[in-house]
Length: 456
Image 1: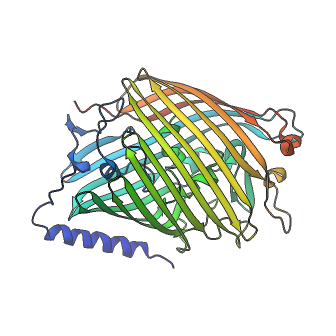
Image 2 (image 1 turned 135 degrees about the vertical axis):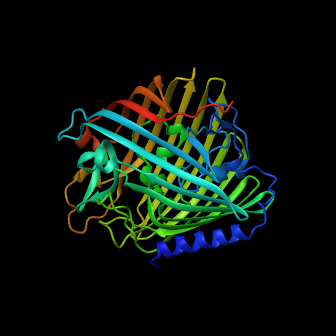
């Protein structure tokens, strides 16, 4: 089914405006929405850990829409974001920029893998919200300049696999994100005091499959690089033609999505529409303000350009924990992802544990520990696939990352930090002839993002 996005978005906006015009007065909700936040010197800011006290239940957290797609993090999770009221609209800006110098080295190898590179990973999220009729309307975009700041269609990342460019697989590298990471309209309707019905439509967006994607997770907020298990866990965070319906009540939320399953191609500046040929469903549970868990399952059609006849089943599960501290915050995630190809039945699992601790306000330390199944594509490098090639598991790679950064100086509305991280890898014997036994990666970087301020 090919989606006529201009028609759908116009119809939704027209319908919402009609409902809003027909309402005599805003509905009296017992819960406060995103319009009920404190003002300070003409600028509206969220009170968050490290900035101010975090409050609110799961439904209020959903209404903020500060994560990727419709995913959820614990209610107490901090979100550095600039906010301002203008009439009935609340305008917000969120983002992250890393300027990175990276060295990836494979010791004792028989061929060169890895390399060094200077690049930037980044994303920017402008958003606008207002009350409309019986609910709240949110317009959101997610943009990235990585097509320009990550040259050569990738940055070095040993053992990384996923996506293709110009007919060849991307191996030992992470592709840049698309310029249009998300263009979405969201509408949340309070059908009862503690029940929220949500609609998400996006020509480019994030379906209900997987946890919050790694660029947007608080537990990965200081790590400039992608996770090795990205393509088993959360790679659908940039998908085409996404429609999601969700129903939340109390601490539970169930969602269903339809979307186009093909991964983005090498044309990163374009919106690449297709047909809705894939689906997913996700159950999210928020048992308290500091905890969040999800399980999701999806069927992805013709996922990879090099394997057009191959479909994929994907399931993920995750648990997130966030603890506000007196002068900081502690965010952690445990994630499992599993993919199964059809036909063929090749199964790939990945496991991730990551944690970021902010202390004394300006200091951050973090770790990311992974175990990810890799395929025989690694043995081929970026060479064209031979005829009748069948991708199969070849072993599990371990990655151990540790990093530190410290914020410095005073820039208006910007939090800047200098940092570094090191990654050591555990290599299965099947990959020793190519990678040796002791690969390592080192990255130093400058990090910039909006600075949330206390509303008091």
